[in-house]
Image (cartoon, rainbow, N blue to C red):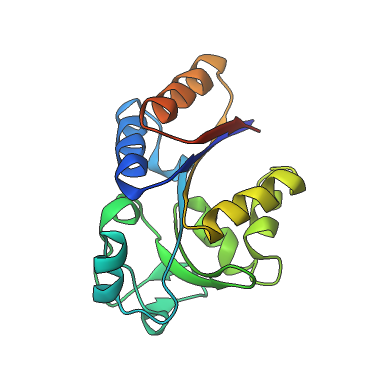
Length: 168
């Protein structure tokens, strides 16, 4: 099975891509989003900074990767199981989709470790962690077997402004 990872410079482009991917038939359980959160900011403060509502650390259940206590908007709101995680070397990140569960147990290995667990090579995983640290957004579509579906998702990401797209 393969994964397609796209790096987006802003939330609007990532959100458009995720919506289009879902409309193309990919199940929500196969799509993950990872974006940098703001250290110590409340949900309202983060809404102003990133254009969406994100949760503070106090409102999150690290055990199962879900955020509680309020609504999460924007791209994370498109997905179930969104949460804000404290990742060593990166700081707070918001993650939605299957990767959120992987991150809840990967605090020691950070985002790189969670991506390696998904079958992404370590060098590429380190680069993706750097991209998130710099404020970019990752959209990850996993569990894909059909070459046409891989090509379609890659085209959707490209059309919606992904700055980097790779198939692993």
